[in-house]
Image (cartoon, rainbow, N blue to C red; front, side, top):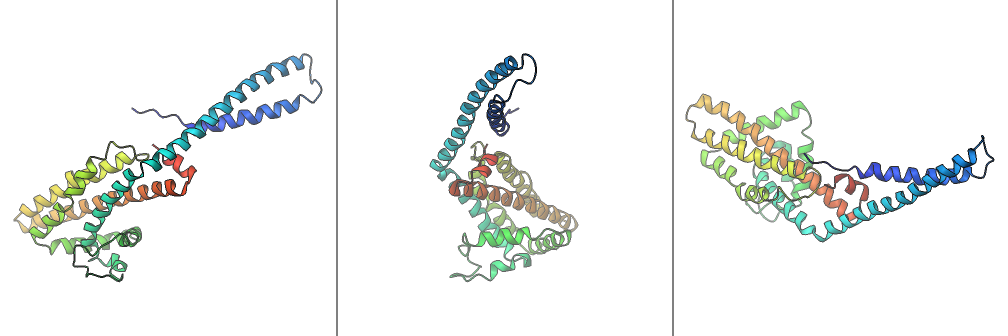
Length: 264
């Protein structure tokens, strides 16, 4: 089990002690409130003085720590750029299917130099539209409509076409698997693990089983599982990409509070 210190509460406690020390010093200007009150005041004042100076040192250390973390992340920015590159190439492969679905019709409207049928038709400017369209599938009716569209599309693919589509992710899956132990941001390793597990343990396997099945009734049931696993695989990629984009923005625009919350 991993234990983490909550620096936020420690930092806040230090600030409160420093403020309390100043307030207590101001109380020294008032007359003694009770017998031996001056002695009690001096004792408490000494304790608060020590704690306040200790708090200043701790608070400064915490600030320095997060500034150093931000500097380190900026120095190693290519690590995040590499992960984003892998995810982008996975999105490009998803777009082969998603651009055939009505939910993503806005992507088709973009002016392009090459037709959508080309494997190099997609670029980074398609991704915001993809994410936006995907996020709009937020009701049960829209989700069911999306699922039925995928069932229809996958059902009309030949076994070879479906296998080629499933296998097209293998290179990026192998690359992203090697990234799991890198500390990107909070819970990034879980998100990365979710992607390759949904692919290796679900979508890739069920696609192979579906292609080998000859009984039409069983094939219809397996097709539902193919679509369900594909949707989980897609959702895992979108979730990681959004978190990664948020963290990259924190680094580039120095959004310290969000950076601190997301730091691993």
